[in-house]
Amino acid sequence: MNYVLLAFSVVLAVVKSSLVKGYTDRAPEQNSRICFFNLAAFGIAAAVQLAVSGFFALSPWTFFPALGYAGSCCLIQLFLMKSMSVGPMGLSALFCMYGMLIPALAGPVFFGESFSILKGIGAVLMVLAIFFSADLKDKSSPVNAKWFFFALATLVFSGAVGVFEKIHRTGPDKDAIDPFLSCAFVMIFVLNLFLFFFSKKREKAPAGYGNGIVFALATGLVIVCYNRINLILAGALDTMIYYPISSGGAVLLTIAVSTAFFREPLNRRSVLSIVFGTAAILLLGLF
Image (cartoon, rainbow, N blue to C red; front, side, top):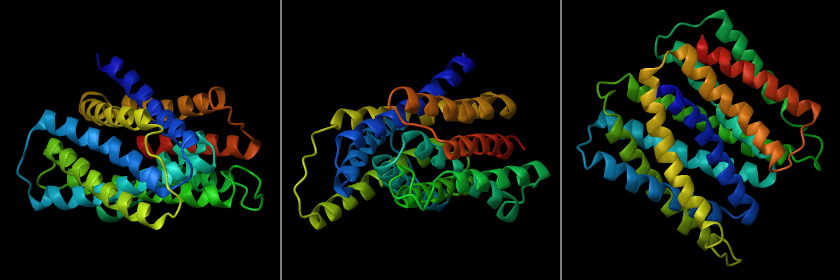
């Protein structure tokens, strides 16, 4: 049963990226449209999570890491959707996974974790993957400087999510997973509500928000299922099995879907970025 859930986890990761890409292809590049998508998605996620876990009492050890986690998740989604709106889905999603470089390096510095030579090699490969991801001089390329800025911001806040997860999982309330997720989803909804009205007020051109709402609602359901499945698998499977298949499998399947269904071309620099990045993810995750 665990291996069925593992396969389902990989598929859900790709489905989420595909839904986001499907929405950005149908919506203009407006911050209010992006915030509306996230508002709807995390509204569904928060409602379902609260229905599952019920109401709860929060300690500071749960609330403050959840607040940092929520803010980082909110900005991840914003910059991920911005990067997908101007560039390829595959590499944009890959940069979200590159964010693991930050908690991997923070572990030995702040959390007393060991640092191996293989982790060091993984960090170097990750830097090479980032270097080869875009040609910053070619403004006509879909992976140019504008895309690279959004993708790099996605990486930074994805890494911040990992750090706040680690803070919570090393604190006295580390087993309070349901309250942590419920609190985070509610706060992400509130943050997107604020950003939506703020960005809508700043944008002069009116925007319709009904187009693509199905993508947002479906994404919310995927977020809940994906997080819950991964929490189950993290405690049920060996790391040597779980991590390479969940992360590495999601990377390769996302690239395959982006190429086959969204017709995104891969040049030599993109291929090198994918190869180095996948190798780095496996080294940082396993060692």
